[in-house]
Structures are given as structure tokens and as C-alpha cells.
Image (cartoon, rainbow, N blue to C red):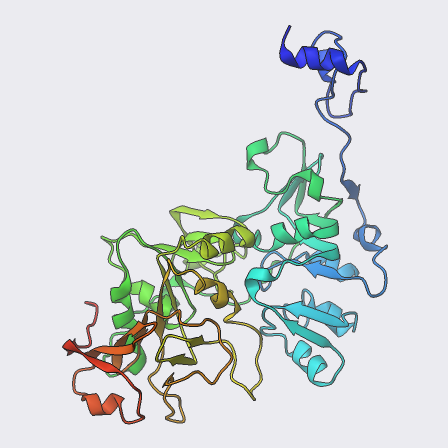
Length: 446
């Protein structure tokens, strides 16, 4: 007699068959035992209004998605993205009293409501965004009749942690399938976290920023362009086999110069490893975007995961390199890149940077203009802006020079743009020592 049979006999009762399959007792020839499938925890709804009708006034609701990627369109319409789509509809109807988010983004309605005193706004770093709530409105790809859920590509993002964190999780899917359609090991959310399931009538899946390979994968060729020289110097920071997270703008442009003989695994904090270039027009996918909400591709060796897994990679120091922009860096490597006091801020766009620069195992490279448009230096003796990270920067690349940063000794000038003198980078009094091996600012081969 097997151990399982002894256990079933010891239990001394038989569990009724479920509507999805026979009991184990039936399968074992009548031995009292456990059912192979219990009644599904999740309730299935045909009408999305029925699935959310018990959300009461002042309830705390989490709405998943990254920009417009992976948002529960049909559930929202029954009850911020852009003004006229996604959570923006709730703002338009004045159904949101308090908004907790990492980035307001393109939602001008949210900005107006906040400035008019009609909306409370709390900005929080992206890595701690999934908090507890009464309800979570979640967007899945497929659910089986047991309530297990899978997601598609980068539309997984914050859907997984939010589904787990809510008292009641309402999951909108594109398709409801039979149990066994996807393998147990492929399940992203087990049914214990899923309370309600609704199949959406239609999914528009708007694209926030359409980016095509032929339009955007252009290399910066002119050395006379200050931005181009930063890009072509930043590209020299890549090493074969490294894992790197690149910020929007110059860091991402630098990836265009990665040698075809080199493999660099690009990480995106909303859940992609192996990020590829912008796609050709016939391969555009609304469920595959980068952190700038632009359509992208993924290399064959790449993979997808949820945002909470992504930040575990970040905080655990599994990235070799973080390259990002900044508004200010102090001589000891204090980084400020998410807000300028006295100016409107759309959100903690650098909020994920607070995690990205948190591990001493990850090398941090900042790319930025040497001075602001008002000709004020962005490298300072001491920080004057709210910090993203303290003593975390290892190297600074500007349009004029390259500096190494020592957390106690401060800056060392190691490269200077050809044609400039040391006086050209000290005119604002930035304090640094000069490397005895000072050389012209290097540039990757075009």
C-alpha cells in the first residue's frame, strides 16, 4: 500500500467528486481519499458590473498596469493612463479622492484635479507601489476554469503583486480556457489569490508611444552634438555578458552602439530581461513595451517576469550596471534625479532609481549635460535637491568630461573632451583631483 493510500484510509472519509474530474478515491478503485480538484475559489461573472458592484464608497482600489500596458479596460469602464482611457475615466467622473502612484505621466487631468485641490496625491517609489487594498482590478491574458491566471509579455508588470496584495482580486482576462490548457508549472497567479474572473468583451490595447526600428534606431554620428558625444562615451561602459538597466534617453541610445560581438542583457524594471531594439511595423505588440512606454522587441534569449521579481533582482545586486540620467550629482556621488524643488513634478520618474542605485554590488554610471540650460553646473560640492541615493554614483559622463567618484575622497577627472582645457570644467568651481593619466574623452567606434 502506498503512503498516499495509507493517508487517505487514515482520513476515513471520501470527498465528493468535483465537476472538473473524479475523486482520487474513484481513480484508485473506491479507496476513501482526497479529490483531485476542489471547487474553484474564484467566481466567474458574465457581467463586469456584477463583478465590481460591491465596491463601496471610500474603498481602496489598486488598478494594475504600466502606463496603458496591462490595464483592466472593461472593469474600469464599469466603475491614471491617459485622460480619456484607463484610470483617467475614473478621474473624469471624479470617482478618485486619493491617488497613490509612482508617476502621473501624460495625465493632465490628474494634474488639474490636484492643483485645484480636488485630488489627494501621494508619490511613492515604483519598487514599493504594490500596497494592500480592499480591491485589485487586474488584467490577465487567460484564466482556466479553476481560476488560475497567466499573463502575456510585459503586460504582467504590476498585475501579479497587486493581485496578491488585495483583499478581493477581480481579474479581467481575454480568454477563459479549460483546466489543463496551460501546464501547472506555467501558472503565474495560482487561484488562491483570485476571487473573481470576468472575460472582457473587447480589448482595445492602446499604444502610448509607437516606436519603430526604422524611425528610431539611428546612431548619433556628430561629435559636435554634446548629446552625441555623451552617448558614444557611455557605450564604452558595456562589457560582454553583463546585466544592465538603462534609463530613458542617453543610456538607452548608448545601447545602439553595443558591438554585435558582445552580449549585454538589458533589464527593464517592469519585467523584461533581454530587451531588444524597437520593432519593425509588422511586429508591433501593445503587450511589449519599455519603461518609456515605447513599443520594443525582445531577444530570443530574453524572458518576462513581474515587477516584484524585477525589483528583487535589482535590490539583490544582480545587475552589473545601472546607467541613468541626473539633475544633480555631488562630489561624493549623492544622486538627485527625480524632482527640482519649486517646479512641477509628474512623479517619481527616478523612483525606480532609488532601488536601482541601492545595491553596492551594482556599478552606477550617470550621463548628463555638464551644465543646465541656465549654465548652472550639475556637479556640485553638496547636494541641494531631494536625493535618489546617497553616495551611490561610481562614474559621471558629461559632454565635457568623465569623472570617477570615490565615496570619501570625491571626484577624479579621468577624461577631457578634445579641445577643452581643465579650466573649462572648473569655471564653476567643481572640486576634483586630476588623474595623472588624464586622456582625451574616449568615443566608441561608429
